[in-house]
Image 1 (spheres, rainbow, N blue to C red):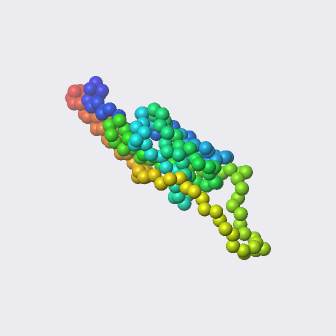
Image 2: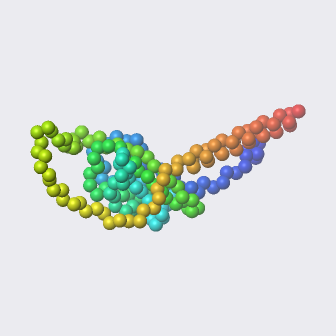
Image 3: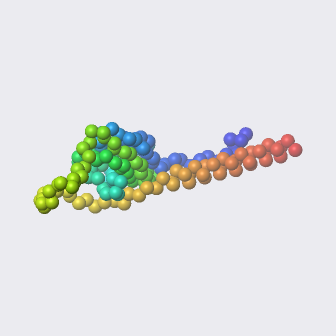
Length: 177
């Protein structure tokens, strides 16, 4: 009888991250070659953004996202140095709602060469550093962390369940009286 009093929940149309590689909060013994994200729903390649940044919030050079169904992959242009990295993503749900989120992983490669530190005897002669080429500039889409959407939905569902339980209790109590 209580099920009659509980209103039907709206269809869940928002996309969400189902699986990530590297995993959330993972500590890796070697640099990953890619970030692979699998979502609950098919992705629109035009509206799929994945950005990786280091602990200094500097964007790490990656390929453009390659989308295959509900999975998107970006590959790194080179190995990552030891440190904490943030993966930020932005995708669009089937209802057109933008879903954003982020997570961190750590690279802790014990065989990585530590950056050299000058010793007191080191030569102070100037050295020439060859300019490095960077990937062509690409218009970036804004990627911000917004994990509050699932929290709000959870609170709303909890309130609806609590109200339905109280209404059911009062209904049963009233029938017995």
